[in-house]
Image 1 (tube, one colour):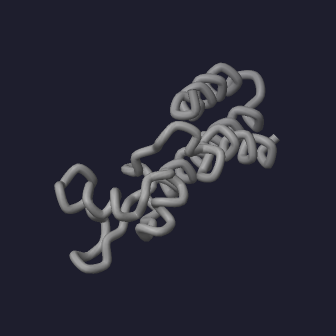
Image 2 (cartoon, rainbow, N blue to C red):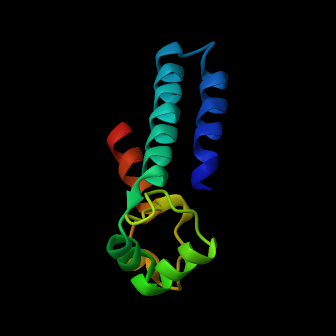
Length: 112
């Protein structure tokens, strides 16, 4: 659902444009801001300690996954990083980590 919001908001903007150009522009701007925010959050590079906290995998396990090529290394050979978008998640990981739905709700609340 989160990934569909920019498309949905652009559709609403197209529907509103003939009748309420300012509202259409607001929907278009919100769609762009949401896409940029979602992209930036997913592109963030985490240290193994940060990745372990968010994913609920041990840092050692993440290091092994990097070594095996199961996860792409976004950092250097001796300074590994894991992009947030590539992070594996264990059950319940959203409780202690980044929650996309909560992030979208926060952005929508600021735009409204």
